[in-house]
Image (cartoon, rainbow over all chains, first blue to last red; front, side, top):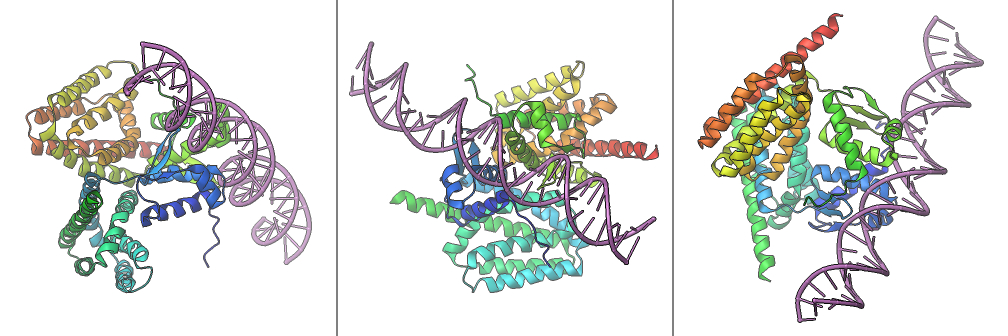
Length: 225
Length: 225
DNA sequence: CTTGTCATAAATGGTTGCAATATCGTTACA
DNA sequence: TGTAACGATATTGCAACCATTTATGACAAG
């Protein structure tokens, strides 16, 4: 019984715009006009504005007074920054979490992992894979009891998501990540916090590197034509 | 020629409210009514709402749909979280920054440090000390070239600021921090990144511990009466 | 006396319209 | 020909008003 919840229009708009930016439907640097969005989504401009403000806090748009909002584009160095932060924070979280993980926690993590496997062969692959990937990672941090930090990690993930999706799109699935995920879960189940943390760090680092390579290739291609 | 800058009302309101929360003028848990704030600050409710949204992103208020906004209160465990994150991120930033610090960077850092010394003997001690403290720390990270991370650290600092100020108020100055600051700057000047990073970690950790002790004492006192 | 329902009040969420600001093309002038 | 001032236009910022939701309290039934 999902207890009907009244979403405000602002929240709805936030979700729509976030999805559009992450999916690449709105691409980086593109200006987001309040009026046109308002007209298109059939709401007034106030919810649009507030949505844009929230998205700015998430780092997905840049909001300049009297100039309008634009979808942010992450430069290569900014990607470095993102993955460096994740590589710093997430293993620490995991290390704290592992000793406190209950069987239930591990079960949901395993569930996500299985769904991840299925997601690769389905239709709307990319979006669901990306979401499940985030959920899997976060579920492993449930034992850390660090809600604020978790929010922060969620934010970092959201930001790197665009490039993860791009990576999925161009590289066609990620068997390597899947393998690493399984090993990671194994370590967690075994209660090996340090081993798990180390694996995770490699995992994040390699994801960062391959995302970066992809972007570089992309940039070269677009420059050469 | 400072190129007159037009602040929007929203920005003005954000600054006023942030200062009120950090200074304790608005204390934790206190509800923030849009109407009364709008009347008091002589603006409509729209800028107030947008300001509250921004402050929510900073973690200073909690904004619940249809229920209103309240100033957040940080529990002890949340403080732990905050200082743990700072202790994780800031030393890493510093280590990356030190090798790239120019003489100019170091000069401004030294300048802030001197101002910090003066601030202790003046009137509006707490507010300016707190601000200068943040500026000093941030100035040392200028060489890291990590703008996004810097923003994040700024946010963490803002959140811990309330308790730093409380600490200053009750403990009356912080000669210990001053000493540590000097040593820190020394290490940076000497180009000793690892030493500086280690010092910084201790510095943050001890600040966290003493803040925590203070809060605990505070809670005991209020419970006992 | 407790409890559930309904009406009323208060606060927030959202729409429309107007004012302020930036952008860009045009024109005048060096 | 280049540049600087200027004005039209588009876009954002803000205020006043209306709609919706939540909280409060009275009142009646058990």
